[in-house]
Image (cartoon, rainbow, N blue to C red; front, side, top):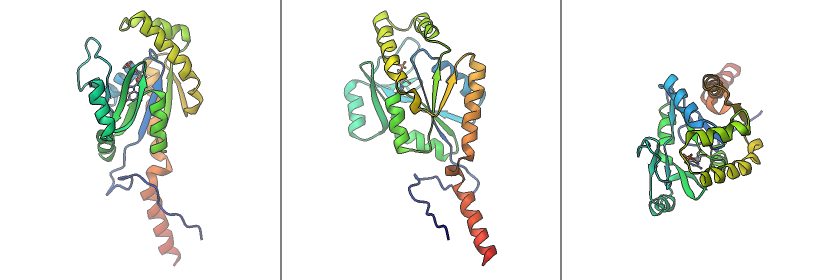
Length: 226
Ligand code: 5GP
């Protein structure tokens, strides 16, 4: 007889009733790839389905950014306190600033059935994948590197030295692109949104999310055979 235990499942993966646990998707991409725009469009189109994690960061807010909406803006000391208290699922330093994902919201939303999205950089993405092997890793790229440069300069939110630092960082990040599971090219926002939506929805059929169903089938077969 083949025996297998449901070991190593994170809390809440076996949900009561018909409530299914939300999936976990990580979206990374070079600075200027259009992640922010694509995420906004995805959430606007499928608002009831998705929850986007709001990260903490020690970076200063850009014009128009609101504390608690784009990020929880923290001082370096406050951020280090979050690390010490183990309040973050992952964190990383990116071009001299800390960025990290608060733990509570992610589990809360997934347990409420929401498909959770983390829009984070590569080091953090790999940390999350270690902790949550069921997480799906998507890398979003612009159609070309020239396009990336145009977008970074065009949006005018950073000074030239910062843009150059971000492009150097993009070169480092390119080394890790093949650690991801899917590449999505951001040609048009609409197509990109649909492609990401399809990828995430297909995750609901991952065995990880069908454990209850599998357990029921096994039980029924057992009863039927005995
Ligand atoms: P930005 O300063 O342009 O808002 O973000 C810079 C980089 O930090 C982006 O690549 C973004 O995906 C990443 N980032 C944002 N939040 C987090 C987070 O919570 N954790 C990690 N590891 N990276 C993050």
